[in-house]
Image (tube, rainbow over all chains, first blue to last red):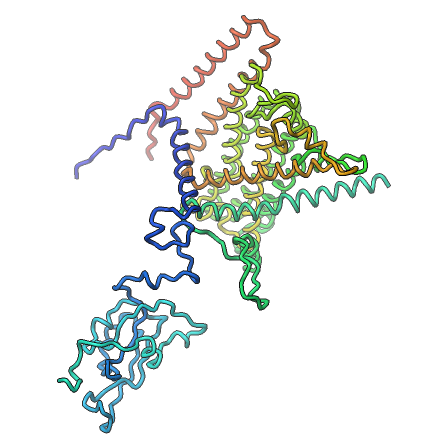
Length: 188
Length: 418
């Protein structure tokens, strides 16, 4: 390795006396302060600030409408356009889940059910939101496109049990998702 | 009966001025610190904590711009576990926090808060103790708070607090020299050490840094006052910066730098004992600003020759000008505290050797030369022209010599190798 000797920059008198830099600094901080109070900070508009600096003040202002399309919120289960639960409880998501947040109890669909040909659906489907790291691997691995990361980010609870999303809750957040997988449809 | 009356007045003054006027300034400055720093950094800061009316069934909380935040902070610290580690030297460990707060609050007693109030022909100065050695008293008592920090560092009996304590000892002792020397020109100018008299003189003849009136009349200052403005300004600069160092404020907060010393001398402290250090620091800042204002910026005086009229304001027998002056003093004080905060969020921290060099090489010499400069200017009207000339030449030679010595000692520092 070649040794590069760095020369410290030679300071002139003004720089050595230091006061110029101090005054410059005061102007810098004060411009920031004044701009913040006037709500004209750099980026205040793009970040939809509350009028003080660039901060959005949370409970009153939500960033829901500013969420990007690729935002990864809570993982949820979805039903298709015909009201069928898409999940066939193949348990791939359970196996891939890095923090082991997903627990699935598969069950068979009885033969008198209109969707009997799908054969399986989950009896219980729990996602422990304390463990979930919002990585999106479950969404990626799902062959039936049944699990999606939605934009919900306010996952709160007063006890641990509140933080486990069961099947009902997952479908409630997930809602209906149309398209792509229609191998179980009448159409095919 | 007279004695009881006197005692009652003294107790009222102590309670009102210390615990009603100065002590609330400590949480207030914490609040300002947080809001102002937030504003500087394009944030909002604590703006929520107020009166929780929703708990009482109302529709909306009354947020008061978050002014109650420091109270909430204090409550939090109060409810935390007060943990004393096993390895500390208990007696000193418990004593240290008190030793930092108490001196700062004691020094309040010589600060004049306003012009005398008059009720029923009885005038009362708005000072707790009208001592004739005001600044000296402040220095002597305030320097006791070094013990608090040093003892905290030593008694914590672990590495980081110890280094913090040692740093603070060295820093505070070296800056006390600059602190004391820098105000000698001011004291020479007034010929008095009583802070009330100093402020009274400033009210009549112009503030030390703003001498635009004389005997209550607006007008340009005479040549001697103009010349004295320069040593006064140098004294102000040195004194202010030394106060920063003395109160361990930001550009010089090496005793408690979070990044290298994990909090410095108060690493081992928790709960209310930590809060005491916190309070002590801010109380020292309040007192420091009060002293700077009193000495250089006219104390309670409104200035521009208005003070005479304000003092004469009265309803019947009650001369209330003092209260207006007190309001003026508090305004100045809060403005100066805001300046302290602005400095903290503007100026980057010094390295320790730079700090020591600034104290010993720059400020000590500058303050000393400043004393002689001020003396020459003050004595000039009584001296012959030749003597003034000789004095000026001597001063220039001494100044250049000092600068030369400082420069020579800087060149080619020996590289220490282990």
